[in-house]
Length: 129
Image 1 (cartoon, rainbow, N blue to C red):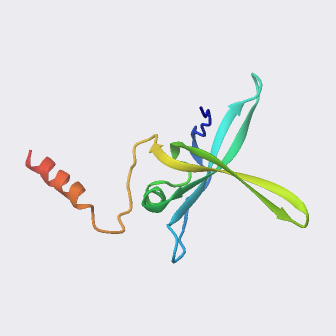
Image 2 (cartoon, rainbow, N blue to C red):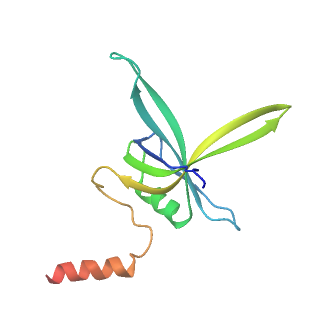
């Protein structure tokens, strides 16, 4: 029986606007950094800065919906990469998100393309009622 389980849930605010990168043969990749404050003692706190990656269409949606300062809940898995440069090993970690939830009301969302037909149908139905 295996007891391996890699899951994390984080709540914080975006440090800067998300970046979307895509290569011709690869899924789009959205990256951003989440700032999470934690209490050290009764009088002091520290802030952790956690890099987040979201792939594919979900990443495109994150780029469209998120911006600097947005409070967000992110769930996913921790990924660690180790590279060797000049004989030294360095490790980097990243959270690969599979879900996110914005924790405040969205005031305005820039619309870059046509609305989804399902969303358009729901809007039409709500106007009729």
